[in-house]
Amino acid sequence: MNVNGKHYRTIWLNDDGSVRIINQVALPHCFELLDLHTVEDVRRAIKDMYVRGAGLIGACAAFGMYLAALEAQPAFFAQDLAAAARLLKSTRPTASNLAWAIDRMLLSLGVNDNSGVRDIERLRATARAIAQHIADEDADACKRIGEHGLPLIKAIAARKNGAPVNILTHCNAGWLAFVDYGSALSPVYAAFDSGVAVHVWVDETRPRNQGASLTAWELGQHGVPHDLIVDNAGGYLMQHNMVDLVITGADRVTRRGDVANKIGTYLKAIAAKENKVPFYVALPSSTLDFAMDDGVAEIPIEERGGDEVCYIIGKTAGGAIETVRICPDATPARNWGFDVTPARYITGLISERGVCAADATVLAALYPEYAKC
Ligand code: MRU
Image (cartoon, rainbow, N blue to C red; front, side):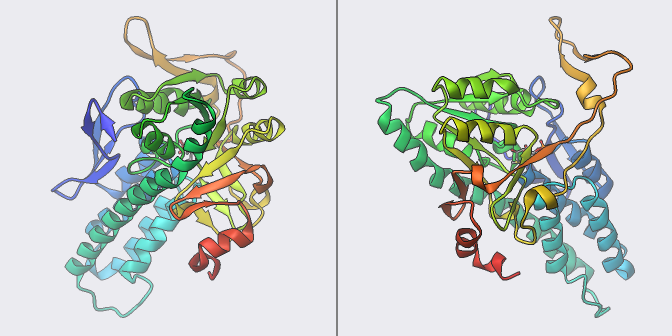
């Protein structure tokens, strides 16, 4: 998508084989590109959230496995790749895209077959091609999510006689969370680009403020009308008919359609059901995890450091970026990154194959190859 009118993806390979990313920790105040040269660079970028969002951490991990193939000693190729896979998988537990991308790289490289003789240069070329393919596929899936979600927004717009369709979103599931286009925001961009009047309510998304820092930034870059709101405003807005639909992203979706997404999503879903506001979740199929059924019981929820709750980073009136503490010095804090919204709260899932119910039978019919596993 566009930054100052120029098209960017969130991640790409440089000619020298290093991986270039947009440093999302620096946004919105500074647009900065960073190069990752080693598996350790990739590990740190994912763990410290220089890259974040389900699709993007999957693509970044895939490129990390390519770097692992470059670093691996030919005689220990399989062992070195397996170690890199363990390291990268240990960074963030909730989004299924991460392990999905790493496992796909391992499978394509045949590291589980112990045939011994390996053409290392061919394996490295394969690793590069598959990582690039995973990134391209992510962008393509997100583009199609936009195409499938567009009719939902158009149908609401048709009832509103030109008044903007008000869409509430939580966290950042825009293009910054993927390789391009985004999941939840892809239908919004598709609607805006086709001339439908849209307006987005952007939850700030404490504690890391992905809504305030990232969603507001990317919507602004694209010219989409939006307002930033505090995380607790959604219920009020829904009670007063100020939200036409909610679209969020997802970090993991189980066989029966339970959805893990950024902490606070569950409360929005409850408020939406109570107020009869349609609640959609957008995801590429790399976010599906049919090995899990009951999301509340089974999805691993990342708990991050309490400092993310106790401190806030922002720009001073003088333009300096500063970190300040917002609670008493001795106050302890807990910080769960995600929650699970049970399928019964979800009006529909928007994936690259279409819009469907959050339901085991329907999902299995749409994704038969996943259902077999
Ligand atoms: O902790 P993050 O920023 O990596 O969380 C991921 C998210 O941005 C959200 O949960 C999002 O809605 C799903 S990822 C597209």
